[in-house]
Length: 109
Length: 109
DNA sequence: TTTGGTACTTTGTGTTGCAAGGTATTGAAA
DNA sequence: TTTCAATACCTTGCAACACAAAGTACCAAA
Image (cartoon, rainbow over all chains, first blue to last red):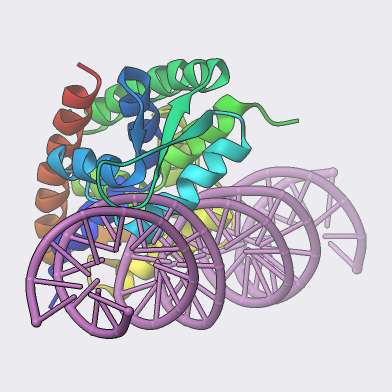
């Protein structure tokens, strides 16, 4: 059973996921499973079926690149790295996010 | 021609449009065309093809009701009114929005 | 009666989040 | 050696949604 609140939060997360991914990757390289952990810790819950296609899209847009790295256990990991283009996009997203926060603050006055 | 920034902002607007509509309607009744004006003024640009189905969805969910009112000029206007259920949802959205703003602030530390 | 302004509605398209299922690698237990 | 569990990456099918564009309807003034 799903609450209305879950729906509300899920809807709001849409559109900022890319922002969160770029933000995390601007601080350190990470692979998909570790990104899932970080997002969960940040209360920005995402599932695999959302994250993998999103990373592939951002890579195809030139915002990310990646390299393979051996894992201490299990299959190799695909470490994603933010590109210069990705950092530029992140700056735009910072500005866009800031403006949206202010717009909504004004609406909720 | 469309800039990357437009895309970014458009993506971010998704998921908060319902929040903005309920917020405006919690302060006063309004019809679709006037909502378009208000949202535009608040930098939350939306187009007709987005707004009308959204209002219908919210009405079907019981968050809004409406009444017809004569216009000084042109066809009658459909004034939307927020319901008690809509106000409850708005409260949830306030909380959800607040938490998301904080989550992202933490991510961007 | 035609024109222009206002207002509401619908259709078709592309994107995206997600649930569910699938593939592959590794090391340890049976 | 075979099986199992853990880790990790990927794909498919579906539903929701924003948007552009086109359509419908009402009204008053020219």
